[in-house]
Image (cartoon, rainbow, N blue to C red; front, side, top):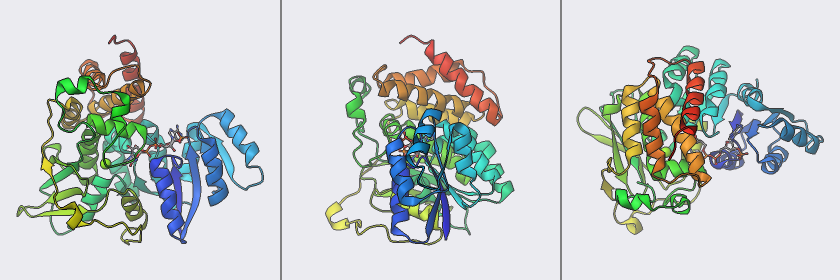
Length: 379
Ligand code: NDP
Ligand code: MG
């Protein structure tokens, strides 16, 4: 029996993780958490009977407690609640499917409690990869990537041969082929229409700015111990090739599949087993062609900034990520324009005081500094 805890069970990755649980009768859900979606969390508790549930606000936790008093689930709130869910004694593996830097502390707690991690929350490794990866090694736990590109790379690894290059694929998002002028005019509604993937709002905007690919470069460099310079972004319009690994003889291994996050989720949960997901297969005859191109770093400035921040390391990826989280939230509230997102990231990166080896508490302070700094910027 596989025992799992899901941080962010009401989101896109969280609900698809529960779809995988429904397909398998040897998985038991031990913990579920949400931010605000109390109705869906209640439904999930009634279906999966976890020991622990957590919701962010204390008032929501009280309400939830009242609603589910006929069940055995214990309800917690705040960061303490997330950490409780991440460290619940009975769980073997924690699916980190919350969005943003809120995922850092519970992930560290889960690793310290010797839980394996099915890692969806990329912001955690982007900011704290230099702490998380050595900690995982020290405690002997496994980090299984859920992000589709990283799962693809993981599936392409060859234990007999080192990686020469990672070819990280990207769909290019809804604005692939746009000029700088075109980007000035895009709306929130345009940015929320991803051509191939259905995901949470924050990552959908990150895909439109291509900051997502920048975060993934940094995530991959930590997960696979590869230099940022050895990670190349390849636009693969159809999202059929999920990433590739090149070896010393220039041979390349790729992982292909339909754009369906349930594959990487299932692979992370049941590794090394591959289990049934659905009847939907890649149909090469109707696909006919696969298209490849290079990203335009002058148009997608956020990707360029992320590559530079990744190369610089230290505090730079945290400031990049915190500025991006802040700016995307404002864009989702229609308070800033699409092109303000990379502009604000650049401003915060330029203004911040660089440090080489930030601790978890430094990372959380840098987040606060970045938010306060950006509040003062007039655009
Ligand atoms: P969603 O916005 O769909 O879901 C986020 C989840 O986190 C929700 O369950 C939300 O609860 C919960 N949450 C947010 N804040 C808190 C909090 N403070 N306490 C407890 N729970 C919280 O995001 P996605 O599922 O799209 O993405 C999750 C992570 O996975 C991100 O880091 C993303 O980059 C990464 N990822 C996602 C992919 C995808 O296909 N969606 C692909 C690859 C990576 P509520 O519903 O109540 O708001
Ligand atoms: Mg991805």
